[in-house]
Amino acid sequence: MGVENRPELFTLSGQSVLGFRAHEPGTGNFWAEHYFVYEGKLKKPVEIDQSAIRRAIDDALPNGYEVRKGGGLDFKALRYESPIWKDGDGNALSSGGRVLLELALDGSTLRVESVEYTPQACNTTNNKTLVIPILE
Image (tube, rainbow, N blue to C red):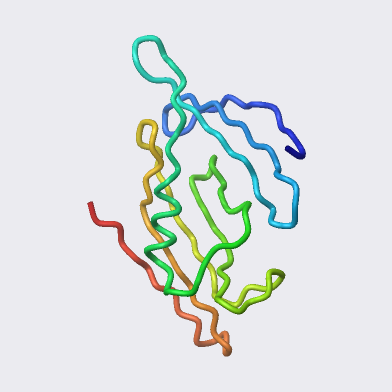
């Protein structure tokens, strides 16, 4: 599975979290990341649901834009940031801008607090950040 890291126990948002990351081989900087919180009377480990990240990215980006590489999640900082590729971009160079998600840990679920998508502009003085509020 590539470079393996040791499991780590840390506190985040007042909860004990057990985390494990392992780098996956290849050129994509992908990581297998698994994080657990302890719930219930028996304090059983429950894997933290990270699916809100993918949904928020898919909702924020225009059609034909995507995240192609890994490594964007900074779990301890509760942030996700990644360059964006457009259809037709080569794998080595993205031209679709950047996406930044601010996250919150809610029990065994990651919740997206905010999404900022900054499109790539030919003239960088015209770059504007689109802030998308998350309504509950």
